[in-house]
Image (cartoon, helix red, strand yellow):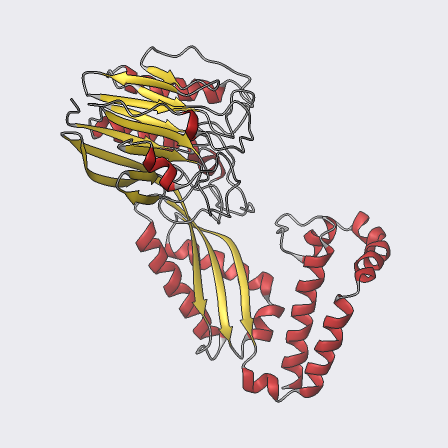
Length: 420
């Protein structure tokens, strides 16, 4: 009969996956950022020990593909050894990033670590707990069919856990792998579905529980907010509590700052300072915080902001350093517009801006610019802190659409400002 136990549901560790989107600048703790996924995995192990869990389930993408060197595997072996030495079993399923065909390095693992096979669904039983786990690993990086028909029927009298790496249905931000519907999962008669692949924590439904823990550590600005694992508490065969445990060591945040009511640059600096101090207090707790600050709204500062984008970015970095030595800026994004009344009073500037937008629609413009500027780009020195969104960096990369759009926006802002 199912008993009372606790387990940790983990997914999408992506061990040693690089953090993306950060341009290096003075003070950025590069080594700490590079080791974030390892540190988060260590936090997971420590949480499992502190919570005295009975077992750990990793529902896919433990690794991020083939290892660059053996250190990835050795770090995993050392961390997981802390669990097995305490007699805590670990059940591992391979997902699209660490499918059987992608892993070139293999480590001998303790008997307490059990891998789900890829040829067919397998079941592992923990008779002392009254638990059975069913799962099937990815055999290749791209599994497009529903895998659930091959999962076995629920075992009567045991607490059945289904382990599956899947996009479910409707998650457009994630590649469609092993798609299925919640109703299909519920029909299997299992008590809990431990899912992986979707990087946002979500309880899809509660009867039965179908759960994504989200990834263990955010890796770029699209993976914002707290990341970690789910602690599941079962009493007499019934899920009594789910707790999401934040285990990330670096947290990505996106902060929007409306500028509609800001009259001058001093007011803007004060508003940015307050926003960054609030962010450091809310998200810090000793971890690194990496933020994208987005300025929005209709403001008379619009033209000035566009004209001073680089200097403003440096000011924001300095304000972040003042707020906390653990707060860093991923990017400053300008999504402001001129005030409506100001824009409507500038018909000449609007006409010139319209002509500029029409020119940008010409597909031959980018090609002509690339040819004309090729000689300059070949000899222009690269700045030490050249950001990807700068015009020069975009031109070097051949991203002419983005470069022209940014140049157009800055010129239009100047036209509007000058006409005022």
